[in-house]
Length: 369
Image (cartoon, rainbow, N blue to C red; front, side, top):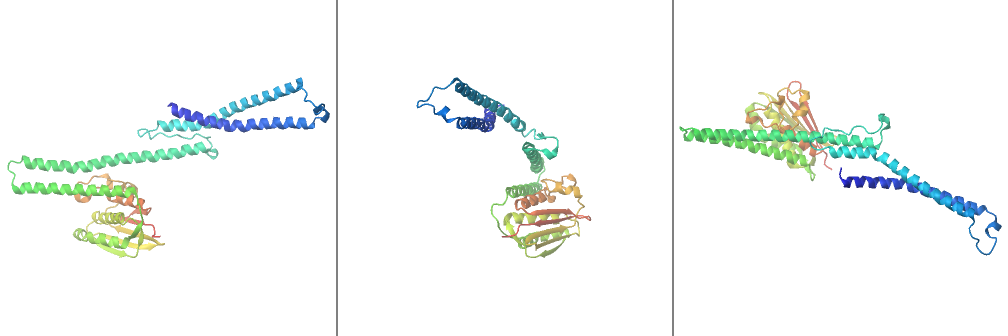
């Protein structure tokens, strides 16, 4: 423990000691003063004013003065010592909290302060409340650090895989003594396709980072217009996959960042079309419910277990935890982006699995003031 924290703690204990001792000493001095004044006021007048000159103090007066001084000094010592001990006992849980919190670091966030008050929960004090609050903070930090480590590991894997594939394609093409213009052109096209996949991944990561930064300024967001534009851009892909698209775009104007709202809608539509089944369907609707704009995206698809939904809202998570090698299947960032943007907007996101397969996703944005 460093000297500076120790000096700060002793300084707080000294201030508490003075806070306890000074009123007690003042009370003692005041009491003695009132007693002396009362004794003088009740003394006979001829004892006080028996001669024009002030008489020298008597031995009894000297003895009384010494008793008063000794009483004040003794009371002061008792008050200071008692205040110091009391302050130390009061600050003991706080010192335990500080010492434990200083020992906690990024590598030991699994530690907890625990209960510092009485065992009876009905008699918890402020220090116990502080310890429980800090424990909840440490728990959230531990989850955040673990999530960050998983994110970095997954992002590294997703970025390294296409780089390794590109290197392998180029090495094979260059090592082939019978390579022709057509084979080299095919290898270059494969490399370009892998590069495009990397660009999409980087764009998705940037969108995720932007969503997690929050919304700096609210602007009008027309969910119906944004959804119509997103559906037009995905119409060809839906037709190729044989997915029927139904819409019900009613008025739904809310507050937020239009660019981020576009990313949210685009990712929901992409997921609904991409993770569908042949001959399936997608329903996209917007409406104003209770004065607030609502976006709903429903689709058929693979059966999603209810306990998998929360995991799928995290970055780089796919159904059944499997990494899909096909580049057309994405990187498992779509729902994570939706979650981040919804949180940044203070929007209510509900993701419910459909018993027959697919998802029902509802996003309630804030109303436009």
